[in-house]
Amino acid sequence: MRYLIVAEAYRDLERLSSRLALTERLAALLAQTPADLLPTVCYLCQGLIAPEFAGVDLGMAEKLAVRAVASTTGTSAEQVAALVRETGDLGQAAERLLTSPATEPAGLTAGLEVGEVVRTLREIAAAEGAGSQGRKLELLAGLLARATPVEACYLLRLVTRNLRLGIGTPTVLDALAQVHAGGKAGKKVLERGYNICCDLGKVAATLVSGGLAAVEGLRVQPGNPVRVMLAQRLADAGEILARLGGQCAAEYKYDGVRVQAHRTADGRIELFTRRLEEISDQFPDVVELLAAGLGPSEAILEGEVVAYDAAAGELRPFGEVMLRRRKHGIDQAVQDVPVGLFCFELLYADGEDLTMLPYPRRRAALEAALTLSPRLRLTTAAEVTDPAVLDATFAQAVTDGCEGLVCKSTGPDSGYQAGARGWQWIKLKRDYRTELSDTADLVIVGAFAGRGRRAGVYGAVLLAAYDADADVFRAVTKCGAGFTDADLAALPARLAPLQSPHKPARVDARQEPDVWFEPGLVVEILSAELTLSPNYTAAWGQIRDDAGLAMRFPRFTGRWRDDKAADDATTTRELAELFLNARRTPAGG
Ligand SMILES: Nc1ncnc2c1ncn2[C@@H]1O[C@H](COP(=O)(O)OP(=O)(O)OP(=O)(O)O)[C@@H](O)[C@H]1O
Image (cartoon, rainbow, N blue to C red):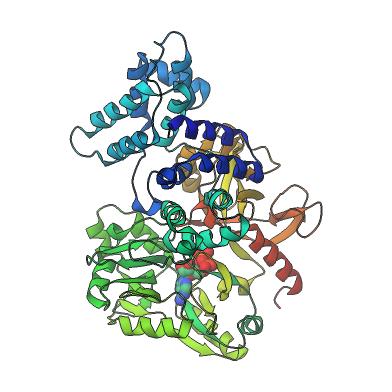
């Protein structure tokens, strides 16, 4: 298959914006793709060449890519850099250089094959150590020398991690279902398949080799992260119990970093964050704890890593674990910020997929699988049937240094729902109680230049919530409060890689910020109130026809949610529910 077919699809996708049109165009590409290349093309549509969790780092420094373009087109790096400034990105600059009559026209052999592109990109990613920069440059230049202008454009965007197609994984799943799984009905099956292996290529390969039934037959497997199960939220103990059938397991909600630990057949233990980053290197002590205390020789387990003073039996504030994640020199960090792992789920043990079992059986299996130690613990859990007891448990959890409770269904349908924020888990947090305020995790999609004291830095950011149904980010507020001078100074560097010359395709907003950003950076925002507004597009038309939801008096809590990807942000649906709940429950009630 020619890479040009993919590149031309990219070009079309970039120009489209409606979800329907994007899906159609993607479907046309997938329909043209031979079965053996389908997994590869699915990865390419995600801007990847392997599943995300594999951590294949394609990211090539732009400087190096500029040199590759210069050497291929017989120009200087300075000339290429100048054209990048003019056109806004390296892809376009290269495309222009390759099209211009000044450069030697590509020969008749011009054009690349998908297979060789991906093979070469793998080599580029794998090159390390002495001389690797030169090797990467040489490999990329080799591809560029035979690329057509439009192929060069997208190749460069891919290697510099700048492929902004305006589609997320849900849209690729839609297209895949349309072509190979009979449309909407098949989509659910594919979605579940993706949720339990986080590998779009694997889902596609299974689908074309064995049909939908084979995808249905996919089971969780150590080594393949499972998309995490998430919680709904409610503020009232009685309502929570009613939702959970009058009974629940009330677990302490620890405030740390969620990890999913995998022990594979070869004995290796890997830790993944909820956004599929492998972070075993940051927590070698947690790996050791599990190596010593985890019974099954193959397993998938979940827990919260918390800064923990085992001698005093005391939980430490959340900030300390984040400090640990940012620190260099991990040995020192292990000493400075000791942590504990509080386990709450077992998804797989020795050949058995436990996700379909109800909660009480999974919990029993978890207890049986662990030999506990001072730092390897189970989450505190209590069977509760009475709202007053649930309130008391909540108070105790807060006293013991937790954020609140995660109330879990114990009923027959309380299986582990990968990737879903359902009503099987309901969280009750401190913030819901003390004031009529709540935090949301929102994505920065734009920024406004600062004035006065904030001249020269961003003065406020435009924030959006995720509309999971449309796979789009919709504006909900503008926020400047709560950012310290240090936060503000750090913002431009954090946001620079996401900057976009125009409103990104997946952003829906009526504001005109000074700078736009691709959705990527998530921050925690505390707000006093949600209101209806004609200026904000979050949950547009869901509560009132001509209005969306806006946050009043938003404030950055100081917490960067680096553990969340953009599509893990608070959803517009959650905001709509919060709004409706707040209207039902008067302040303090
Ligand atoms: N006992 C527990 N059971 C499940 N999750 C727990 C537990 N203790 C702490 N947690 C954490 O709480 C989170 C559950 O809340 P939710 O699913 O809404 O995630 P979230 O969006 O990260 O929310 P939050 O910002 O409130 O942590 C889990 O992702 C996990 O990190």
